[in-house]
Length: 147
Ligand SMILES: NCC(=O)N[C@H]1[C@@H](O)[C@H](n2cnc3c(N)ncnc32)O[C@@H]1CO
Image 1 (cartoon, rainbow, N blue to C red):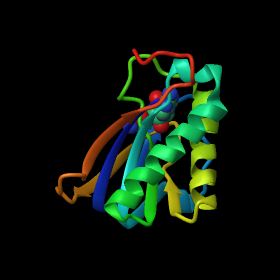
Image 2: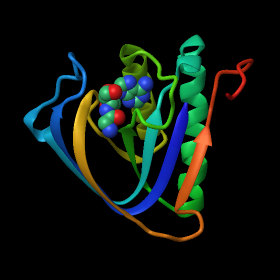
Image 3: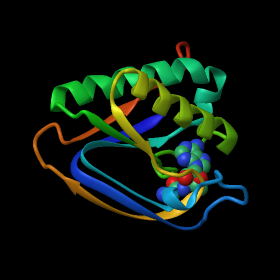
Image 4: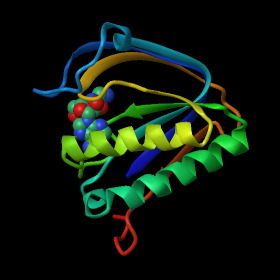
């Protein structure tokens, strides 16, 4: 899994078109979303993660929590982003992984939004620009190597 973490004044998105034949069903309300004072986490779930999705969820949540504590962010935006890897996991595995990351971050006490899966979306992002505002992390199941 590849993650790009951007500490932001805000992230807002608007769903445009379907990017998959069967995107995640969403309500009218989910077609637009915004969070202020947020750690935006753009995530590409990778094929290597399919060998142990639950473990990669645990590792990702640990990394996100660690960065959020460092930058003092109480909100996290989980954003599916198929552009950080050339070896993507299948959509059904990727969606489940992203849903579990959202759920675990909420259990940790964060306010969390997750952008809809399987769509092209317009988005606006305001990066804060401090030294820890732009970070990347890679997590893989144990025993797998990072390519
Ligand atoms: N920016 C627009 C977009 O990325 N759209 C992506 C994601 O929302 C989602 N998606 C599909 N596979 C994956 C994956 N392995 N990891 C993350 N998202 C995925 O499906 C869309 C088409 O790939």
